[in-house]
Length: 92
Ligand code: SF4
Ligand code: SF4
Image (cartoon, rainbow, N blue to C red; front, side):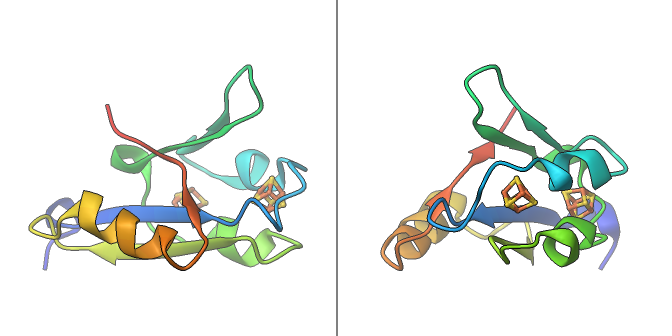
């Protein structure tokens, strides 16, 4: 499957995240940024799925899933929320 046919879904566990911003500093494509309220914003269209943020996070707060476009993002997020994970996806 071609890269452009895939999209990334980044999940961050707020119980673990200390907002150290290492993930933001590491991301080579600026797919992760923190807004002026300190909220992690993920820009899926920029993500190249290198998994660097997942690896560098000292609290193991991040997980990344690469999905085919036909996957229902809202349904996936509901499923993840039921497992006590908060989704910080920002779709432009
Ligand atoms: S590296 Fe991990 S703990 Fe630090 S801001 Fe990113 S998600 Fe939060
Ligand atoms: S997987 Fe790589 S490109 Fe995607 S958000 Fe994490 S560091 Fe950035």
